[in-house]
Length: 132
Image (tube, rainbow, N blue to C red; front, side, top):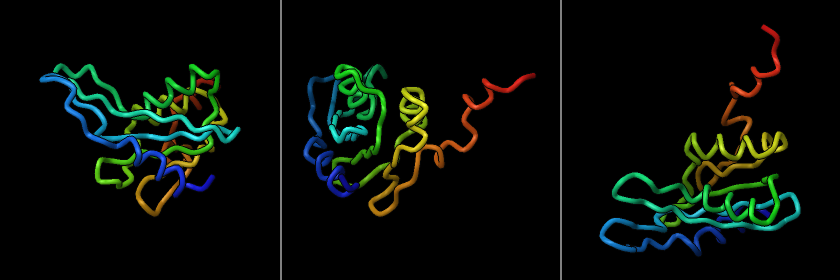
């Protein structure tokens, strides 16, 4: 699947919703494609007490429920439909799922994609195999 198609899938879910006085959701939506071509989606949850999470985390939870861990491509879009790059926490989460995810294609804006490894050039996990 190409990145444009993955973006269109994510756009379907980027629908801001006020859930309650304390919670809003859907300002960002994410779509992850696995190495098998399956797609998992998630939405952001924003809370008054900072207990919410990013859309990518929701998509990863769906991926894990299905027994997957390898992400071929990922994208997040805001409520206007524009691609937003994953935050550091989301990059770290996906990188820890599988060593193969270094090669995950990540949309960083509407026209640019790069690998997760390019976004995390000095990954702390690489130091875990070094001898002191």
